[in-house]
Length: 461
Ligand code: ARG
Image (cartoon, rainbow, N blue to C red; front, side, top):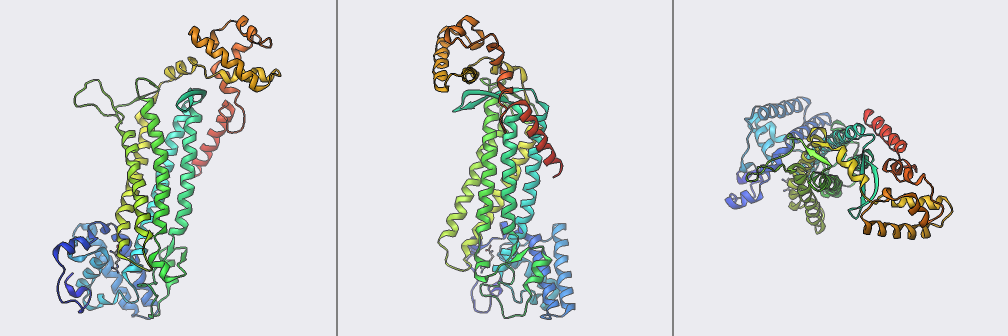
């Protein structure tokens, strides 16, 4: 604005480079709806408290709604001179209403205003992220339900460990997403606290009613301390931490899909809906979607570190440094929403598991070795002794290039007299999986239980 936007204290306008440097309108215009909502609640409260007349309040609200209409029509396009969204709205209101518009900012500061806008904005976005998490979970669950009998190698250290149900593997990510939802719901409780009425830092001598505005804006509580109210950005850090975990989970799954889609694994095929080609190599089909998700996780982690660093040295109360919270928050939320949607689409229609390849993989390794040891344990052999015996057997098999399943009964009985003809059935992959009946294990009934619970939970969401 002209120098007089602040006050007659200023005689000269801003240097153009500084005007650009200082302005946040380029990005905080994203808070326009919330800024209007907050101002409408503030105007109504001023009217009810008798700070302005009821009629003045009505006209202020009409003016603010008119700006909303202009914005929807694309004709509200404030420039750099407005500095930020709050000044932009106030300036326009004064243009529309004349001097009455100058009453809106009574008993309020941009400091409590921006905090209010940001919380209103974030509350809605947390709800959108929750919905995106639910869609992502549904996509995973549908794949899991479509493969109740398919097995997949289970790994530790990315070395074949024990076979598991594919559904079990996918449901692990559903669990992570559920915790992500819980974390965000918890953060939301602290986002949903209203700073409005803290004014610049100390409260106000204007007889306002903070509880009225808070209630009208749907906040559950108000900040108890005005200094804290205008300088708390904990909620942005907490949000980014929760989003970072969402991204870490997505990135791990993305990494698995990338591996699975490789020739070496061949566990999934990518459909044309979510894969891309090469500009040079005609045979290529690339997993760009999970690669981008994996790559984008770094942005969100970076925002978390940026926010923490921005806050750590700030004396009470408001400091302009806080203006830096917005781009981090906006980009972090946008990135997370985009990635959740992309991963949901990927599991909805972007990939197809290849049961024959999975079946062959599970049958052609030594991931049933633990079950051989457990077989002996069930017949009274101490576990460590059984473990040693089976280790020696695997070594011999590797040298002979054969699988445990290929050994004749004599070889088993040479190793230990307790082996009987049923050993072959016991170490078949399906039996190996079925035997893991402990709660939360990969046994078929346990996985069916998990599928049912996940289905019930998602259907009631
Ligand atoms: N654009 C500012 C921000 O994002 C609004 C608050 C400005 N307050 C101030 N006292 N300069 O933080």
